[in-house]
Length: 251
Image (cartoon, rainbow, N blue to C red; front, side):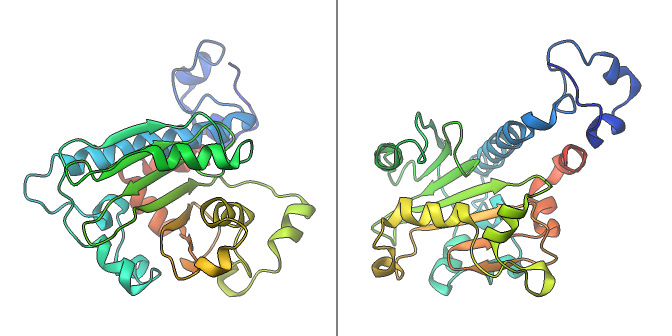
């Protein structure tokens, strides 16, 4: 694996680490530009596993979804009222479920959905941390079963890198509004909406079964578009916690 010498992360590396550039990967700094997407997926999935595992060890029952996501009142206000309260309820579980999907929704929409629904949650094990198949539009998913709901909640998380977008991609996003906001939900969310609800999604808009959370965007403040939550750098870095400097270096 070779280092992309043009990547900012390379320039920030100590000389001793640069010297080992031609040996197998010893640091997340040693990645090429084309590998950044995979690195962010690995980072997001494993960091979420750590945060959930820490919550499982909480003996004081203070672990909540808000704690796992490091959300403050600012981010919670972006969710519907009926979902907002779920973030502040204590999570009681001893062992989260870890699952990896074998197909992505772009290759097999129905097959991927069946795999996702197959993951069984119970009152003893109400939380699953799910890793997508390669090529998916999200990096990690939390599937959560609450006692007050008949159906599980899904939180699809995407940790985005700073990247130069083509004119075609910019046109697809639509014009930007104040605070660098998107004027319509991103394409990844549109795909997920079809994935979760099918083509008749308008008939299911009252269902709050999933949310797509984009982290690491260039928005100057967090905001919501339908079930898509766009987080600014402040919320993203708060979530990254001890990995903040590594995340910033990789960007």
